[in-house]
Structure formats: C-alpha cells, structure tokens
Image 1 (spheres, rainbow, N blue to C red):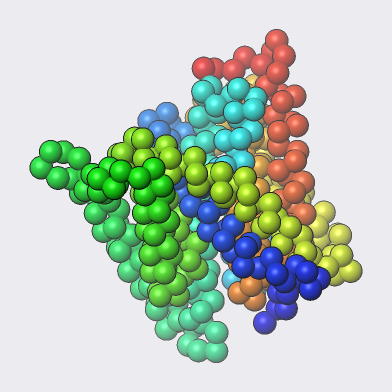
Image 2: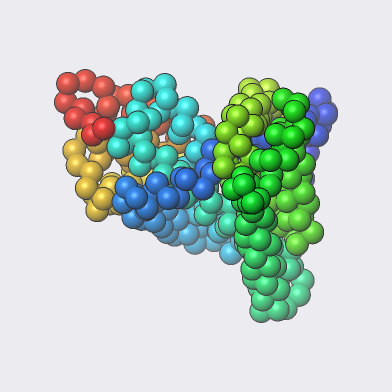
Length: 359
C-alpha cells in the first residue's frame, strides 16, 4: 500500500475537510451534467465527438501505460485520466469567453458531460476490480466486480425513476415534498441527504462514494426538485463546493506531492501524450461532426481542461494504492499544465476577425 499521508503534519488535518470538498465538488459536477446534457449531445450530433475524443486519448494512455510497464489497474486509471474533460472547468472557461451559447461551446459541454459519466463509470470498475482481484482468483474477482457494478447501475436507475415519480397533479413527489417544507434551506438539506445515501450505497457495493454522489447530482434536476428549489440547490452546492472547499482539496493534493520523488521525465511524457491525445481526438471527432478551421482546432484545445475530475482520479487512485507517488505527481502536474493552457490557447483561436464561430 502506498503511503498517502501529506508531506507535512499540518496537511494531515486537512484530510477530513478535503474529503468534504470532494463530496460537494462531485455533487456540483453531477448537478451540472443533469439529464439534459446527454439529450443535447444527441440532438446536436456531438455524441460522435464525445466517443472519438474519449477513445483516442484513452488508447494513447493504454499505449503509454504499456511502455511504462504498468499493471492493468494503474493502466486503466492513467488511460481514463488521459481521456477526461472536466465539466465545471469547461463551463467556467466558456462563460468567461462568452462562448457558452455557441456551437463550439455546446459541443465542449456535451463532450465533457459524456466524459464525466464515463470517467465515473470507469472509476467504479477500477475500484471494484481492485477490491475483488487482490490475492484471489482473477476470473472470480472480475465476475464479482462486474456483478456489483451491474447491481449498482440497476439500483441507480430505480432511484432515478423514483426521483421523477409523479403525483396525480403531475408534479414529482420530491418537488412537492420540498415545496411543503417552506424553508429555503430544506431543498439543499434533502439534496445532501440523498447524495449521502447514494454515496453510502456505492460504498456498500465496494465502489467509491464519489460515484454514488455524482449520480445523485445527475438526478437532482429542476424537474425532480422544482425550478426554484433546483436553483437554490445548484447555487449553494457550487458556492460551498467550488468557492470554499475546493481550494482546501487543491491544497491537500499539493501537500501529497513530494518533490524529491517527482520523475520530471515521466511528468513531461504524460503531459505531452495527454495534450496531444485530446487535440487529435477532438480534431478527428470534430471533423466527423462538421467542425472546420479554427473552430475545429479550438474544439480540441477546449477539451484539454481536466481540472478537478483528474485530480479526483489521482487522489482516489493514490488512496487505494493503485498508483505510485511518482505517477500521482505526474498526473497532478499534467492536470495543472493542460488546464492552464486550455483557456490561453482557446482565447487565441476564438478571438479575432477570422474566428468564424457558429452560433
């Protein structure tokens, strides 16, 4: 097992608060995804971008993992990290550049939605396999892991259906219940309780709690909880998660890195492969979806923002003993570089008289 204690004793005290930050950030990401995100991806034809843009960098990640002679589970985690685009970061960048309502912006958001869902599904697979294959029969462990994942998917589907179960007047029971409480913080409390319940359900099945929390956020739509209640839940979750607790998590991630153990060649290779994988994968998928010129290049660049999602993968992988300190550091530095570069390059490609962005 990898020693996952922060580099300083002061950092150890941040652990509990950082875990709480993970909870709220993941819940906020799930709420942003919602159910409409997937429908929008299908309507605008950007589903093909999402598929190609995930598969290509994932494939490059597996090739890199083979070259590094990593075991299967670290390989899966690294490849998944290569393929991720963080939804909250992408939304923030597009809002700042006034690109959210363009075709480019909608494509990036749709791809990020699909990426987040696939990434959390892959995280569940990795952690389930890691818990069932150590020291036992490989085939039996895989079968048990797949069974747990299928059971979790079934239970999540049932819960999602219950969220939208309607009364005789056509209103979902959940929305009617939150409205009856007549307290502005009631909807937020119910959302947190539901997320905790689904997180606990995931943990019972041997899957990390963040997977359950994410899907709880996905089902907490405006239709399920009511328009006014949804706005309050969304704004409060983002304020608490992204505004207050996320910086604590970032600090905790930084404290886990020991500079003396950083393999800078590995950092450079992982960063380069991750960056090129997104650029090329986005260009291939975007061309198939009808993007051309600078808009096509901007699509690949905009999809490179990994942010919180990548750090979550790295942090959970380190805690579970799946990746080493050196690979953890490489993933964290790769995340920082790609996330910082994405808005800079996107601005260069989308501003100016020759941008030609489609609304």
